[in-house]
Structure formats: C-alpha cells, structure tokens
Length: 182
Image (tube, rainbow, N blue to C red):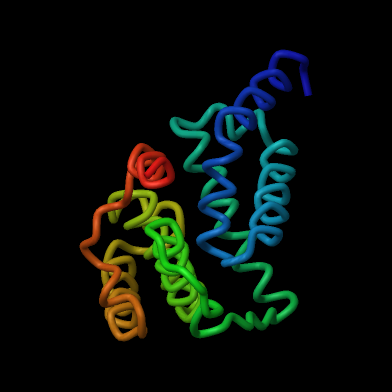
C-alpha cells in the first residue's frame, strides 16, 4: 500500500473507530466481541483499501464488512450467547442507574433477535440508515429489510422491561451534575 493510501486509511480509522465499535457492540452485545469484530472488518478493509477508498461511501462499505464478519462469526463457530433476563438488583435507583438498567434491557432484547433481524434493527433504527442503505449494506432487497424490521420490532415489543423504557427522554449530563451537587 502506498504511503498516501495508508495515511488515508489511518485517518479513516481514527475518525470512525468509535462509531464502528458502537455498531458492532449493538450487533454482538459484548464489548470485547465488538472490538474484535471491528478489528477484523478493518483488517479486511486495509487489505482492499485501494478499492474501498474509491467507493462513494467507504464507511458504508466497511459497515457491510462489519455485518458480514458478524454473520461469519455465527456460521463458523455457532456462538451461543448467554445473557441474563434482568440486570442484578441495585440498592439505590438514581437516574444514571435507571438508564443503565434500561440500556441493559435493550441490549438483552437485541440479543434475543436472530442475527439478520438484529442487523436490520441496528442499522435501520440505531444507525438511522434508509431501507435502501440497509438493503445495500446487507446485500438483500428492501422488502427483506421491511419484513425483518417488522418482525424484529414486534419481537422487541414483547420483551419484558422495554415497555417502560420507550418514550423517556435521555437525561443530560448537566442534570447528573446538578443531582450530584444537591
């Protein structure tokens, strides 16, 4: 790889690393798997960076690699995820703890979805991609995206603990600071 292309790749990784890891975390439900998955996808992107960098949207290309690597993880090893239904009991419930519980509930619910439904839900609703962009990322039709999203959302609606989470605004950092001062 030429020095200029290598510099472009390193800049891409610096700029998009945390975003890609966040997406991988939502796909895997585990921080360590997310980092491994992101590194695997970026290693593949590095090997073909000349082609990747010439696309209209290199991030979308790498995101598709991320989803494919996650699917490969299930195909090759038949990974079984064992997440608990509820987080451990807590003594006090302030707003930050409440949000941690809700996040845990959401991650637990996502973990219950089949890999394709999870990928569609994460890309469509977390990454805020259009149905066409999700279809391109996953290599499927927009109809498949619509049906998988519908099935995934229906399953998420039945997950215990998510009903009370929906519709609450996220607390701001300033409110946490004010709460700690009182």
